[in-house]
Picture 1 (cartoon, rainbow, N blue to C red):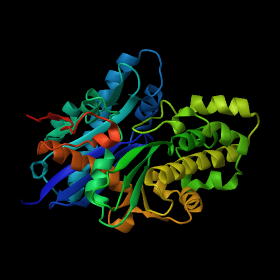
Picture 2 (picture 1 turned 90 degrees about the vertical axis):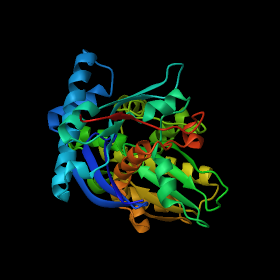
Picture 3 (picture 1 turned 45 degrees about the horizontal axis):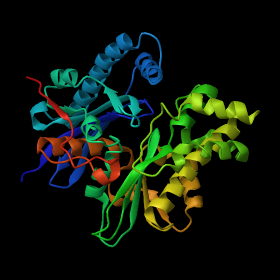
Length: 371
């Protein structure tokens, strides 16, 4: 089979912008080019606001769907220009879109991503695969996380127990046993960067706590951390998934009100500890060992304070970035959606039922043609 090119495009739960990755499959994936496009500030504020209930939501949602679609198309076109490639060289774009709601529990569980794929296809001239999560949910699954199937395809190695941790707005992990007959595992561990980012916006008027600097100045607030860790989500057994609409600023505010006066830097230090401890606990429980190879990707891999906390909590594990395995930590998830687009293009399953809880493997995503 000759090499194929696919593009993965997504904006994560941090809602800071769009990442696009051009991936060559030969047949293993290799990153050819990458590009990031920040959201216009007005659209970013609207997307953040749509993450919680508000007024006139349907009109606002419809408008944001189109505007986000245009931004995704712009990101793809800028990537093609950077790579000096015509649209027809690419098989398809796998667009995750922007998650507005993820409600995986209840009798009518649903998930909602926007960024109209019709707009993306029309403005790029490339077929678009989108709406990856709802088929899995229709089959009784959580619709998330989807990246473990990609992690297995790319990072699994015989004889080596590995855990891949993706720290975006929400953190998720994938356990990849070294034994070929052992099943993988994967689930959302809880908040990744979402609460730290929200606190940074509130006290620093910055979209993130760069390098964990505010957290590093603070001290752990033990009573607050204990209250946060008592949330029932952390005790749920997989399959499980969550989102920033659950671990929201309002969720944090309820705990802060109960905790009384806590300094701003101490709150951030405690939120960082929450992310690190829930990830480390999940690794020990899911992997059955505290000494696997742990490989971190996503925005959290760029936070030295968070990486140091993980190493401190997992002293027997080798904690590193996925770069050590040949895949740049910042581009793993975008590459995953290029892989999912290719799976759909070839009518191959894209989910991992042992992870999501779906009844069976399924071909994920709808196909939107530019013609």
